[in-house]
Length: 287
View 1 (cartoon, one colour):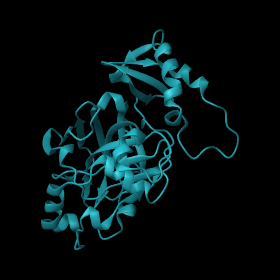
View 2 (cartoon, rainbow, N blue to C red; view 1 turned 120 degrees about the vertical axis):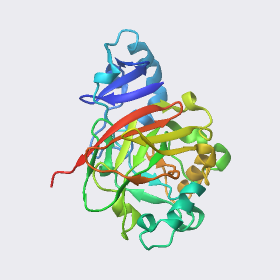
View 3 (cartoon, rainbow, N blue to C red; view 1 turned 180 degrees about the vertical axis):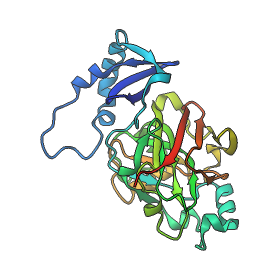
View 4 (cartoon, helix red, strand yellow; view 1 turned 90 degrees about the vertical axis):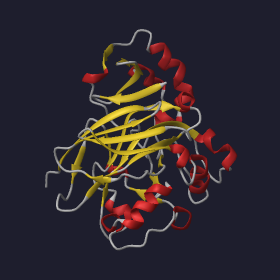
């Protein structure tokens, strides 16, 4: 299934160039009192909801995909876990480009580990990116994103993909500078997720997917997830050895080479095999 959130928090099943409204299936979700669960309820209950979603799709209203306002496919992620310099080609370019490393030492992911981004930075593709400081270099970074489907703690590598609910495209927008990654990458709108979540059964092996990104039609990034230094299953096992991963948590797996600056007025087109494409407009943030 390809599931999207659109317009006024509607749930849609994507089929071809249309969305089928299956919001009614959400009525089966359990009711909660304060305090609300810290995880995403749709993702946690996806297996239970699946039959109802497919049933609702038989009679649900259809609308053109092109006319929908697409939100982040995950409404309530507890955390965003991110993998720095996880392609050798990106490591190499960062080593030789001082505008990327900004005078800091670029350390391999196996040494530096993972980092966290603020969930308040998440938006869907239709919202677009708002450049916070146009005087600094703001870069695009396309990434494969894995969405955790069930609680994961001390997961073994060989079983790690069993904990994935689905995948989507991610843009890990980045301000270059000397600050910690979690600060430069956690600005509002600097985590773009979309266009929808493809469930894990739609993707199969996540380690052979082509990624490509253009800015205003100009090719910038092109690679394949086979070249991840630390694979998706290893990232899940590694992260879960430090903290519990909850349903709806987002794992950004790293960006390949070709990162570059964007400015207000630019249009980013990001594509990953089996996940579709998302067109993201860039504008200046209102301050």
